[in-house]
Length: 80
Image (cartoon, rainbow, N blue to C red; front, side):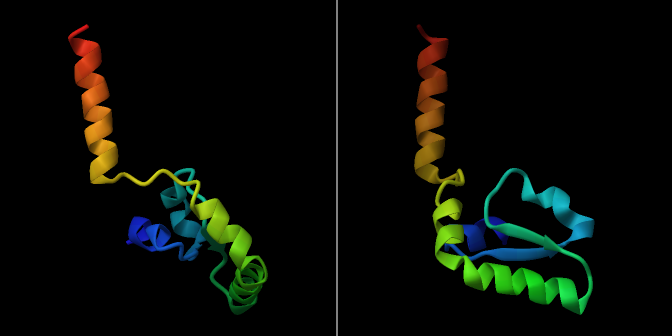
């Protein structure tokens, strides 16, 4: 669901306990499990929404076209 949300340029808020899912992707924000931290994170996203969406566009999304391209590169290298 994270990749799907990011592919739709939707920022995501997660709690600290699962911050390992970020995996170098832009657009995922970590907050503590309390009201104050959540409000701060939401306000930051709202204030910087356009910039965040531009950052999300820089993420690598594994698509069928990307898969085909990578597969062709791999096969080409194997037979050269």
